[in-house]
Image 1: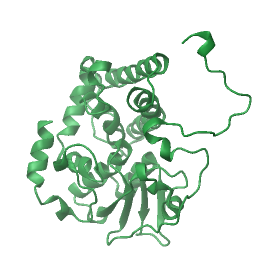
Image 2: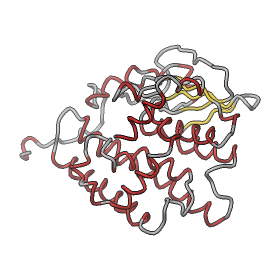
Image 3: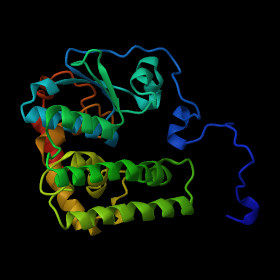
Length: 293
């Protein structure tokens, strides 16, 4: 870009036109609801309002893992929130999450029901509620939380940074793509160095740190995110790919990937989940297909 074409920010920014490429229709500089919409409530103790993006997958994987361990109280209804249609700006959803982002959870085992929003907070809430996937020993618990919160701070650079400018921006520009590709590769290197020393991120146990990181970095390493595997040369990160493949093979992870999914292979989409039996029709075919990915 020449100096004559260079963008010069105005003294005062004003919202004059849609911005955000694919997601321009839902981007705005203000919070709050845009319309009235009551959230549905199903029969189970936990009500999840989400979509099968990486942040949504974190929670459905966690719930399916808890159910696999025999925690019947982790049964849940997963209602689809179509973020491209602006469902997250409905008044009911905003009451659960004033930030208007998926996922959001309501726990009806408490009186009054407890709202939990932000994916990391939901994972920590469920881990503490059910006593799973979070070590009790001080050092192991702290290391797990280190990597949980590392993901909270790092993934926006992968998603809103690299993912946006590489895959979704209305125009492609060299500087932002290069800037965020560099950061995405740095983050993969951080993980690769850690996973060279331990089986999982928190240590030798599978924890919420892995459940939080895998939908982003695991799927990136497996070539499922932004179609960017070759561009970022993910094959270089052998320890991340080993970790990603091991978690990918877990049956609960395969089920969690399907829930609230509206894109990709039709056999991998379970747009709403209200009972474990929802997986029964063609479940084995779905799991076999997922394993073959």
